[in-house]
Amino acid sequence: MINKVVESFDKAVADIPDGATVHIGGFVGPNYAPGYLIAALARHAPKRLTVVTTAMGLGRAQSGDYAESVKHLFTMPVDYVHPALLAELHLVAKAITTFPASSGRGEGPLEALLRKGEAEVELIGQGSLAERIRAARAGIAAFYTPVGAGTSVADGKETRDFNGVPHLLETALPADFALIRAHRADRYGNLTYRGPSSFNGTMAGAARVTIAEVDEVVPLGVLDPHAIVTPGVYVQRVLQRPAVPVASWEQPC
Image (cartoon, rainbow, N blue to C red; front, top):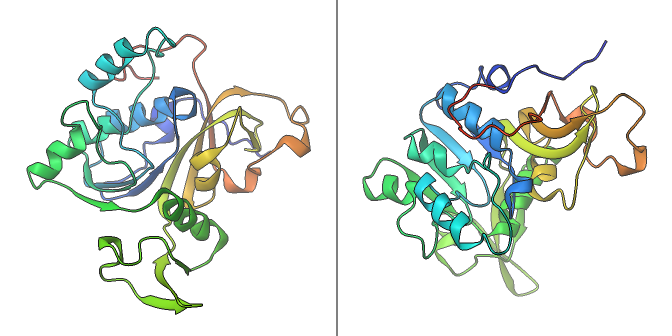
């Protein structure tokens, strides 16, 4: 019987080794971030990670400041954990991202590592980042894009003209593990999303092991086949978020 549901977040990430490349999903707002998986990875604490994510997020102190500044709009969940936590714990050797800094909120954890020479960053436009990940899932080795031509992004990359427009050759970006967030799942690993799937849906299947954090695990047959965005073939592990939010990332769950 196929059952991809894992009983704990700590167990789900226990085999992520030092030096792994990890895709971390999410986009804008806490409802799209795999916070419990990020927290479990922080507790597991593998070293020299390469983290691929659209934004490295806010450090713990910055998160508190941000929550205070937006409280008139919405309440920040107590269990919202950013990829920045991994940098803050000195677990990140390299970040491949579009937004490495936390503009206007002081120096972020990744910026601190960069200043000390403890990490490096590869900047790439958000669309190109998404397409590099999608190409990895599709088995496409590389593709040409006009984005970044004539800028520092082009350094060291092959350039070719198409209809008189320079294009860069960008390579696929696979990972060892992908940590993603979805709304509902069944035990086969089929996933639906609340709102846009964003980088979560793109990263599913672009890694050797995709681990999905979901709000609810439902019985087989409950998910409308037409509503399934990520087929279970792309997902190896599924975990349901706790019914009662866990306030501290250090608490095992």
